[in-house]
Length: 395
View 1 (cartoon, one colour):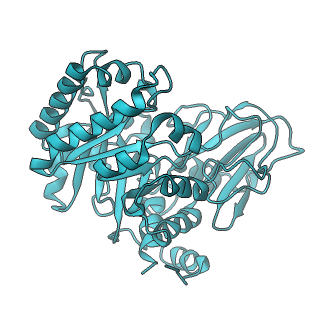
View 2 (view 1 turned 90 degrees about the vertical axis):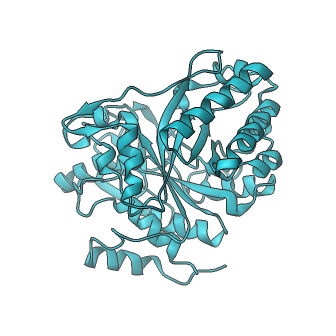
């Protein structure tokens, strides 16, 4: 399948009509991960259930449930309300009254969970059965439509070599338990061949999972030796020929290992990875750096900036920023020694269009609460809207 809609058409329309796509519906799947802790952020960064865009996301993923040590029991997030913005599950499920087609899943795991708790549970038949039972009861009793497994990563980060096999057992048993009520089972996965070799039996997972969410971001960061864009669609100009850390390569890796394109969702990042440059002699990709970028005013995490933190500072201090957009690929920018590689609406549009061209089932975002949800820089949800429009541009 090929598309013949030029990037410039979207750019022109988005500039002429800033609200373009604000109420668009995708003809594919749009997974929106929601960090339930986002209502604890400061001032303009505070995000609650009431901020979720039910007109853009087809699926909202409540993140994260955790495991209670090696028992097979689960821990649900603590309900909180700050200045009227809640993370309440009841409020979340009530969004289906606004959009009857909306699906709401709960995710378990996340980066902080690692394998320390997952591994002993899935490798023990009795504990795994208890885990499946507890997950089913949580999903069923709270009105969710399914579960997303975000185990990062089987057989790694404290895991066992047998995790790869037992992860398939977990997915298969969950699907068997969930099928009578039509509940979804999905998973967020790493995207390199090295990760697949260690963690995933792709063919077996593809058989039992409804969707496979490709974490096609965090391809560069302060763990590297030089600056790099968060999620380049194609290789950066400074990449070594054998690096293969780009979105296009990641998609082909999963397909080549046996994944059905229609089950793959392309991960899109509503944030950038930031660095503190060593000097201003080199401000491109592949530049030396001295450490993580300064924390943003709302998210407060060194080395990571929400899209709304990037665009707000660029809007308020336009003369202080140097911005380079590699068309249809990625963006990087610096403000003095502060450097960030990220996506804007144009590159998100290109990636979503690529997803449709590749026959993928849709797109997913980490995370909905990191887009410009309140319109600090113009229209609300510019990245999610751009993705919906990009995916819909191919027919």
